[in-house]
Image 1 (cartoon, one colour):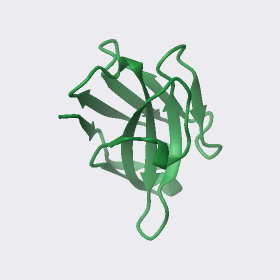
Image 2 (cartoon, helix red, strand yellow):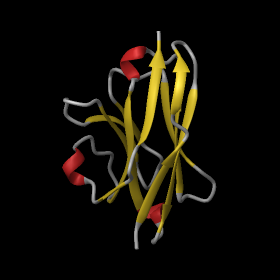
Image 3 (cartoon, one colour):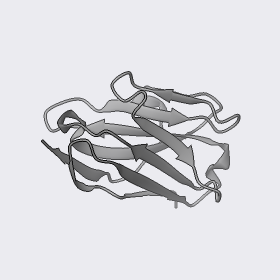
Amino acid sequence: QVQLTESGGGLIQAGGSRRLSCAASGRTFSTYTMAWFRQVPGKEREFVAALSSRGGRTDYADSVKGRFTISRGVALNTVYLQMNYLRPEDTAVYYCAATAGVGTYSTGSLYNYWGQGTQVTVSS
């Protein structure tokens, strides 16, 4: 059974940093594109960052470019989202997603597997 489990969310002051983790199990995710999305109640889910399975290509939403970094752990079945210079508008539930492929995809419907999400709240 494929499972993605996020952790690392919490309450952070504006300007601070936090690292989110996504542990994948159930298959070998080294050949999968991994991504982070976020969602605020009442709004559509928003693309944050993606990391390709090969070559380490990354893609970021303009709103987080230069502040967030997506990376894969040594074990390859763990993906991180390092978030720096956090802003109140980064407050959301953050979801990890995975799909078979070699590119970086910003469209949520292209991802087959999703975690349950972890809440990130940035206070001003």
